[in-house]
Image (cartoon, rainbow, N blue to C red; front, side, top):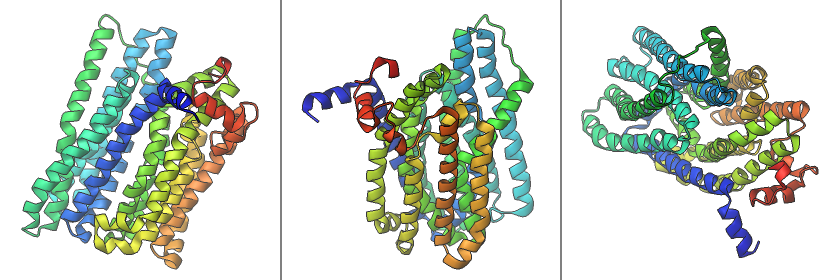
Length: 462
């Protein structure tokens, strides 16, 4: 590829947006990794293991408590705007705000009551209260990110929620935990960490809410809101199931591992997952950028255009993801050592999980595609069924393979789900979102995809 072609490639809007999203995601990914390595280094492996389980429970409930509102806003607001229904558009914002607050408070209250009765956080009231607060705040953050996305503020949203929040948390952990550690209070350490995560997230959520409310007041000042509560409630329930299954499997595995093999191994598993999240961020970054194009191609029923968008996404995310996988596999021992020297013996666990993440990334935007073609309930069945099968097999795999059985189970869940999703999308729209879509002759295969990335695709496919 000559210099002029490279210059044109880098100058294309698609690539520049992706590179900017990559930069923010890479920064957030590094900060996320550093946050948990700092927590691991500032605490004992037992405390880190217990924290990984408590955090996983809180994140799972926070995702559920968001009531699918990030996806709901991304789907409903542009749709209402396209139809010119400003009353419904305003109603979508208000419904999302109200439903997220209500559902998150209910989930957090339920967690607090259960926690105080069964004492899963080691009897620490601070950990219980802080985790409940975190559930509410994280759920609201999911909704506000969706709001900012439809307001053309996606990079600001992920920069503040995913990057700045983690940086603030790192600073807080470095200051507070050493003081508590000198007293040797393990319960206080877990509670303090959860409290720090909640307190550092709070101002970012306030900023997001202010921006969204100002936008609603400015754009819909004299518009009466229309809110079909039952219709949107049913839609949100379905989206919640979709989101929970697609986003919380990593945390569910940590919780299960903690119960099956203990908190120390759960900590090692959690550390491995946080390391391989480097791969997942490439998938998420590209999906955020190409989602509007995929949506438009689906709406136009443009098969070739849709295949080209999917092929561009695979190229843009596949190369860096593959390089990251090679890096993680080669330096697995080093990645685990950063968390704790005793975790080095789990390096092969990290290598196996990296393979699972790579398979997921090279399958393309399967979740988004199924949602846009109106098959989110089928997605729940396929992805949930794959996860359920893998989790049911997890105890047997752990019995025979030890901690490495968890990684095999994880790979199995990703493989079953992505094969089922790709086959479904191919049968429904004749499009393959995976790396095998680069073999599609109608769109020129790999050559056509490279031309599309470089901005040279025929306008009828653009």
